[in-house]
Image (cartoon, rainbow, N blue to C red; front, side):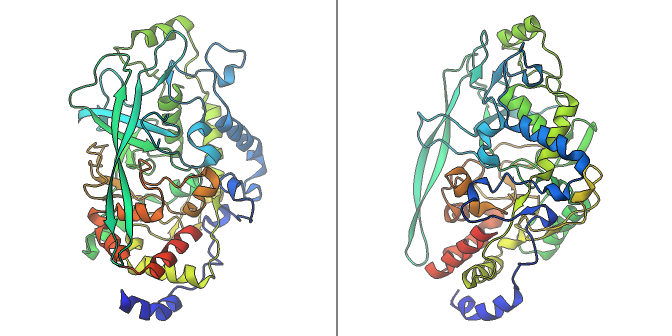
Length: 459
């Protein structure tokens, strides 16, 4: 690492400033001092055809809306339950940002859910739901329907010592359950705690050609450096075929629209044309009885409204990079590449043709992801397969805008279960294919780590 310091002037010359390279291309938004809290809510109206403006406003309203129980005088936003976790999208994605892990066993899970499954696969190769509780624990129920129960976290800690002697305390969650309404969980239960990720830039990621993502995987394998990203192949419910997974912590959703429909169904119990069946496992007789008695409309969100929500997510701007001419940021960028972080967190991608919104096509973007699955080692493993993703694999999360997480959400909970309380903790959890990069960071001096973190906070 001492040699790396001496090489920094040369390295900086190899990485010119990115002033001309906007994070989301035309779908970027400047972050003005004092307005960081709204950084994930910007819409580049001038880049969107005027004929779509009313639909974008409609989608924004539906995303911010609190859903109500059927029947209702407001049928457009009716359909909550019979079981659910939260009544609105922003309950889990405040400010369009990320959720947070509870700090203590008595704290509620705000912006977090627990996936459930048992060994084997469903009919499409995905996780097989837990027989009594389905694929996600829902703690609340509408009148006449009991909530399924509560999940909670307890934490264990250990200390990681860096090469310069600094000690970092890392925490790891253990999932527990209480007040289960329908009997014991399956003896071979597999679980995974997941915080809600930020929702900007999804349209740009969906517009990256599949061939480009597969080419990255091929290049990583050919390089022979221990990085071997794999694509997930998941069920596309509308097209009735398997497709490349792009979204979700294990790349288990193929499109933005299906990701939204999955959240509506899983978190709020709202059916759609994508997922039209109510979430009432056979053991939950009260759930099915209420459905039959009330006789709600199905699907509960119309195709047009789901289309509007999808369009709104497509056009949410990516917060633009900041402080790109700062010498510390430039030094941090050189260190990011020297440590090997860019092998998975690919700095640049380009979008291809995108008929759903042609304005997203042809954009050079800087998301710092390859949208591929990587083995992250035993420390981060949840042991729960999801289509082709095994229990140690996770999709490379985009890093764009990560430095604004604290300003938007008043916390910096990172990784799939929010265990990392800051960027350095997140790095130190890397194992498997990320082990070499983590070790490079662990060997850095305090000054070098400070520069690296300054760069991450600026992208």
